Image (cartoon, rainbow, N blue to C red):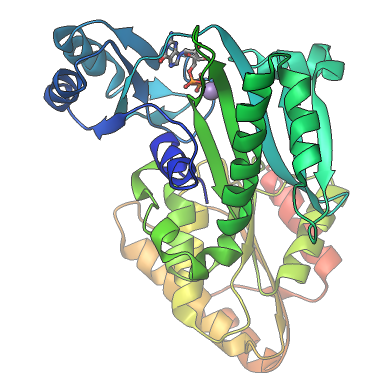
Length: 385
Ligand code: GDP
Ligand code: MN
């Protein structure tokens, strides 16, 4: 789960990191009031789950409360990479002498938390990573030992030469590591980590990504979820207890079981198609889930064909067949009328014969093998009759 900058910095602050005084506003009036209260020059920042806000015009300095009002008015409602800005962070502006980058990611290859730090931080870090990767220093942390003080210092020396700054940075890195581990994060990042002319270090921007599978033990983080900033279909799927990931292709896939769903996506690609999604309706026998799955998939205009791949084990084929028929009925009764998309169904296993009978009663046919079903769906998606 992604959280907003202000939420990540809230976690940083609770771990003792220095962040600017700041508050969130949903209207220009609120932004003005916060700026008045701060009594300093402020920076107004779009709160959306995407990087590069600065370059997109979503981060602006304001010298007076009136200017904060005016700038917030421009940023609120702005579209940044497809996301609408609904709230801005109004923060005390900091004078910047230097911008560094520090981040931790969970690296699957080494199966460790890996630090990445660079003295060349700021808005161009992507270019630095691409063009001069030698400017990014990495360190994999032993999960049992944690970040050892000498490791924190040696990373800090890659960023600063002034001993007072190295000391502050080493403390920051240790706190960032604690925040990362205690929050069950998969990513924690400060960019920029700034140095002021007086030599003080501040976390000016924060980003964290939390492992969804650990949210059950972080009520306070789960409460940070912002439904306004999520892909609506992914939120709908989560509410219906479906595992769904939206992809870029045109074959909508509805599958029971994560392994079978992966195999189905591989097969779609193997036969020259592109899956529009990963969707696991799970092992239960619940027709409502099929209805929700159909709704989610058919609401994506890119989808050209729908492929069901059901292996009946605990899931019963007749339940899935009922779900398909119910979903089609509901869609037909809805504002868009009957579904015009071609549907291919592979149904095998428990209560297969009953399932087929239900489908046949409404003119749908289940094919026998997975390969046949996938090939057919790909061909139909490309316009075959
Ligand atoms: P991002 O573009 O989404 O990463 O947003 P950031 O919060 O990192 O802001 C982008 C850039 O705006 C930073 O790299 C800074 O150069 C600048 N910026 C942000 N806050 C301040 C501030 O308080 N003072 C000054 N002078 N610049 C700031
Ligand atoms: Mn940033």
